[in-house]
Amino acid sequence: RRRAPLPRLHNAAQSSHPSWITAVDIEQDVYNTAVQAEKPPWKFTKSHAEATIGREAFCDVSQEKTSRVRCVAQSQHHVAWDRTPQRVLVLAKRHADDEELDVAYRIARHLHEACGVDVLLADPLYEQIGKRLPAVELWQGEHVSRSPDFVATLGGDGLLLYANTLFQATPPPPVVAFGAGSLGFLAPFDVDDEQTGGTVEETLDEAVSLGEGELEPWPVSLRMRLRCRVVDGASGKVVGGHEALNEVALDRGNSPFLSAVECFCNDEHLTTAQADGLIVATPTGSTAYSLSAGGPMVHPSVNAMVFTPICAHSLSFRPIVFPDSCTLRFDVDPDARADAWVTFDGRSRVCLKRGDSLIVTASPHPLPTVLRLGNTADWFGG
Image (tube, rainbow, N blue to C red; front, side):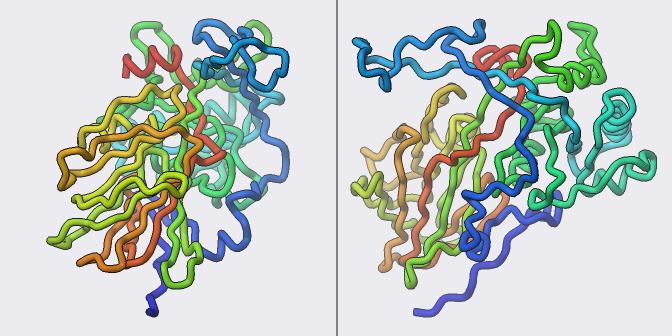
């Protein structure tokens, strides 16, 4: 059986930068080779209590003499700088109004003039405000030496998903997200906070100076991403992939027939799913599509993958939570009545032919998002 090559998908809603990793990229090992000219400036510390930095671990299974057998997951990470940030990428939603563009201009101007860092802008923001700031540069993608030290976003959750697509082959830098969208669960900072009296400029000053003087490291959520690989059933080769922040959804597309998918965990057969589709979500994505399909809400500190069926033709097929150490594989039945479709974060979409497979694992590169208060407070407060 011969199959047409998969298209190189891209994010048409925001930019021409590809969010789909192709077979050529995989042959060049972009998953395991970070294209960076210098060591990232950020560093993370972890603790078992959200209110305490550097609290000792309850146990460590790597210690031979320990008598404890129960290990508590890290509940909070913090971020600080090994050196002063030199470059910042500023993003705003594509259809920003004049007021939001003025705020984006404030952010870029303050970072350059007051904080002394180089500012990178991605299209279309570069076209919209770049002429007012001659010193800014156009973002050329992650495969360049001048990678940003952190990202400042002005928008909602959709903009954070877009920011995730910009760092598919390299570790994403920390993201400071200012809310200016219809959904802001992942954007904890206000442009001008009426409760604290803080401004966007004060937040940026603190972000650039983390860990210096009396400024304590900020709490940060290392948001798990899913490493998704599409395998051609005829050749057995990986033909594409994506690092998803929210979820990967496998569905029947516009076919009137149910999807027929064989589901495996660590090569152990789980079930043959006949359903409208399947979702594998991260803790971040557990409150998105998966939740609407009946899946559980998962605390962002939990390292897990949520497996949720969409309208399964079964009385016993219910959502399952797997540890992040698992490898999930989904094989489209060669005898299925139709092909299946897979969608990454609701943005990039590709067809899975009969006999093709989708392999999902936890990515080694999470997306760090800076928190205002902490994992639990920001989660419930959002």
